[in-house]
Image (cartoon, rainbow, N blue to C red; front, side, top):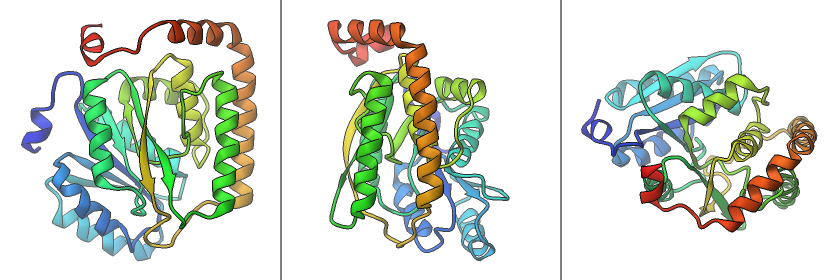
Length: 270
């Protein structure tokens, strides 16, 4: 275990998780970019094709001091991969998990910004919200906006700026509580549902603008019909959940609007 991991400030002991599925062309570049961050990293191989095995084996051997590859089959979805990494992080004593996608669409310096905020606000969920360039497919951009509107409805707030960004820092304890006590989708709907449920539990959401390029290896695993159907079902479940929680959400949001935002010092003392 490296020195940075041992000497993390009290309240925030982070690691990195990369959910991985068939991004053999980009993953070595992503991993090498993360090396200067000097944190333990879990690369979760979510049932990738055999062609990826050699690439991952070489990475695991060359970067064994700080990188651990976890393999399983068959493919179970991004949400399952993320939570496999979060559970591994909990077993190894980490309090926060920084998620970054395997396709190279996010910048390491933005991940460092999110980690710095997590250290200042260890009780919060820190997440990026995408600022897209011309590489983003217009249909994906419009679909994201529709999802954002439903998230705003289901939380009765604008706390979550972007519920689909794959660059985020999870507080491990509340994230695992939700995972173990509620039914969540394990594929593309997971990113949305986990943020909404964290918001429902009163976890503060900190949003950070991050540039996004789609993606460096040209591979997208978004299945238009399957994933849009699952996301629609998730929005329907969350809408029912919002209605059942309506008095609590209204009271919580009124208190939040009436109170000043917490500072790092106040969070540490609470």
